[in-house]
Image 1 (spheres, rainbow, N blue to C red):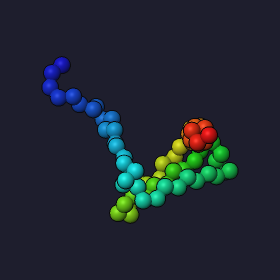
Image 2 (cartoon, one colour):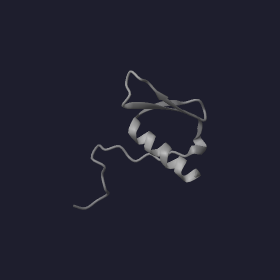
Image 3 (tube, one colour):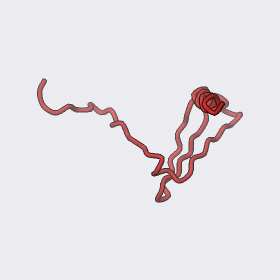
Image 4 (cartoon, rainbow, N blue to C red):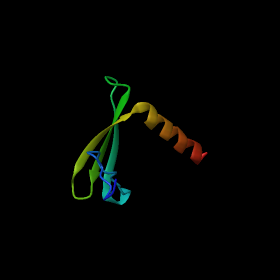
Length: 69
């Protein structure tokens, strides 16, 4: 196969810089304990909400705590 690489409908990897983020909030609900929401407000006012696995967030926080110690 020749020619430029095609993504075949998969979204391109988007790079986000924390310099573009104005405010970042984590939300946890006991109604859905397995998930957390990550709310991002970007410079310019654009908002985006991501759903994340609670276990991954807890692991990240534990790793950050361990680095501080």
